[in-house]
Image 1 (cartoon, rainbow over the protein chains, first blue to last red):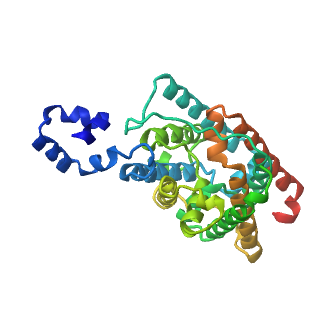
Image 2 (cartoon, helix red, strand yellow; image 1 turned 90 degrees about the horizontal axis):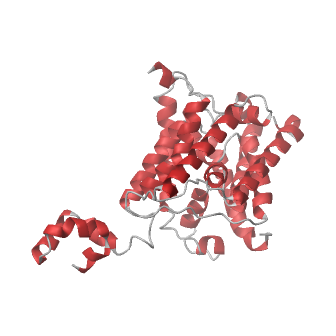
Length: 184
Length: 160
């Protein structure tokens, strides 16, 4: 009984099951709900549904990355050489579509499928945004991949992309070690 | 069907890339950004580390990004082997050498260090950050291009 009142979803469903037996049944039908309802807020990002949908959207994004060819070294090189607009157009249009989506989400107070509010966590400015971005840009030009495309290349069967990932993990460890000493 | 098997034009690709942001927000409540997956892997591989970068990181809350990365790899497989008329040429032939492998390792190192120092990559800063009018993300994107252009135009003869 107590657990049901914490979640709007459960409260709606339990209109007809206000007695003790009813809520037991509700628990049997939806064993996960009662386990989750008390802990949705602090642990967002770890429920089974969230992980499943993260995998699903990942598959979608991986397909888009490969079919749009932004995972190809040649496309990235031609972007930095100003030989073709392909990458600029995709990134630019992507930003515009994402921006309109965010405006609609805010305008209509769209919530997640778990009925949680959608909030963007701003990334504050620090000096690392300048230094780190220059280093990442250099790596992007050399490997022809940013972090997303590394995974897409590996999945696409490019054995060499494992080297890019191993390098990236070493780079991440390097940052973890040096973080206290770096200007931020 | 033939249309799907060819490389997709920029206007379809751009719309689909942009839609990743609302899809991820609505379905998982998470902001689109993939380079955190590196920190997630690091934190999971060193559970007892005293480094603040790992010790203060919430491994359980970040688990979704690992699944997202695995999904991208699966999507890469599907797109290349089932949805392409010809295999996609990801890397040019010059990379299939010892020097090429070293280039990828060093480039990867710069990606890992740089994205973590900058707190995001093309997805977290350029797409999601700018779309949310977060001005430091615009600064980050400009400096992505400073680094990329400097290497391509300045060291191009040495590297490529």
